[in-house]
Structures are given as structure tokens and as C-alpha cells.
Length: 270
Image (cartoon, rainbow, N blue to C red; front, side, top):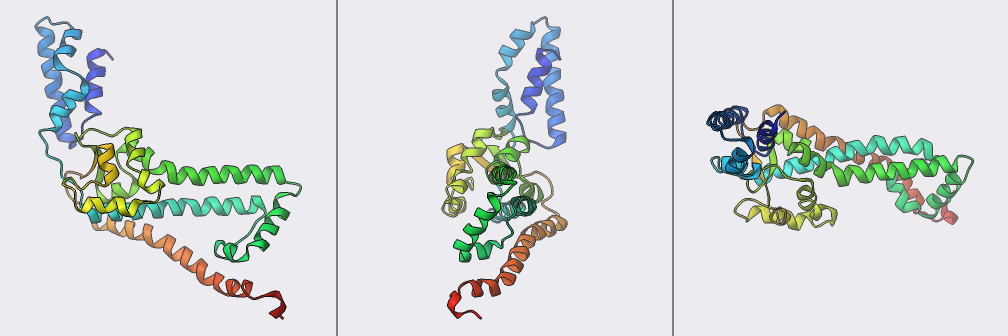
């Protein structure tokens, strides 16, 4: 791959358009370069004449006005993504419990307090204490990674998360170019600091339907070209949202008798 091919590849990865539009633009770009080469102009002067890949991509994207995603589409995608994180977390937690030697209901854990701490002491300081502590650290890091990295990694690599893919929306720079990792991190700071509700309200009133941290990161969420989400996509989103609700709701219902029992003083139990 020569300098020109690398240059064109760099330009193409910075633009978002339909496959037909991208193929047409790449063909025009190569035809223009070939004409300059045939005139005897060296490659380095051709690249200087054309400008940086960012400039070429930006000039292309200016031809196509972006259609910003509706608030409810973004909301559905976000809730689906959070539900997916919970779905991933459930098997991780249940894989950890047999290794740790701790079997608990998370709703009881708050109520049982001292009893849980005693059980932790018994479980962790046994013959397999090192393995249990190591497994717990690994699992906690895995859970943290799910919530901290899910959005930035997927939005950087693909421009969209699973929820956004289903809703046919994606994250771009305001210029229409793909975002970088730190752009994805900045636009998620409101979630990490638990001010996502306040941040999200900005999308209802800003011109480009941006959240406050979207404006800081200079990112936008756009509707993909072509048809909107199909009915099957909405069914999948609904299932992604409902499964964790049903799971934790069932867990709560099952735990209610033991929660009530744990709140009764020992002197009053039979």
C-alpha cells in the first residue's frame, strides 16, 4: 500500500455516509489523484494540494446535512444498553458466588448487615482464601469494566452501542467524522458522576439535540440514513429492558419473607 492508498483509506474512515455514497466518493477521489499523477505531479505535492484527511472528510460531510436522532430514540437505546450491562453482570456475579463461598440475596444483604459480614469473614479466611480473594478482585474489575468501558469502546470502534445499533442511530463528531476514545469518555462523564438525568434534559432544548456533555465533547447523535428501525428491533429492545426487570423483580419478591424475618429481633423469634 503506497502513500496515496494510505491517505485515501485515512479519508474514508473519517466519513459517514451510505455505502453507495462512500464508494462513489472514493472512486472520484482516486480518479482525481490519477489525473494529477498523469500530469507528472509527484505524490507528496498531490497530498499537500489535497489537504489533510480531516479536511477532505469534512468537505465531503458538509454536502450531507446530518439528521439528529430524536430524544425518545436515544432514551430507548440508552435503557436497552443499561439493561444489557445488567444482563452481562448477572452471570458474572453468579459465577463468582460459588468460588467465593458466599451465597446471598442482594436485597437481604442490606438488611442482614452483621450476619453478612460474619459470613464473609468465614468464607474468605478459609483454606481457599487466596483463590477467593483473587476471584473477587477479578470479578469486581470485570463488573467495573462493563459499566465504564461498554459505551466508550463500542462508540469508538463502531460509532454505536448495541442499543444504538437496534435504534439505527450513531455517535459522530459535529463535523460528521467518527469520534475518538476520549470524546466517547467525555460524553459519558455525566453517567459516571450520576448526573445523567440533568444532562439528558439538554437534548430536549438544544438545536442539535445534544446533551450538555455532548456539547463539551463536540459530538452529536444522528439518525442513520435509510429506513428506521424495523418492528423486530423494537421487540429485541423491549426484551432487553424487560428481562432484567423480571429477574430482579422476581428476586425481590422471593426475598421479601426473609427480609421481614431478618428485621425481627432474635428475642421474638420462635
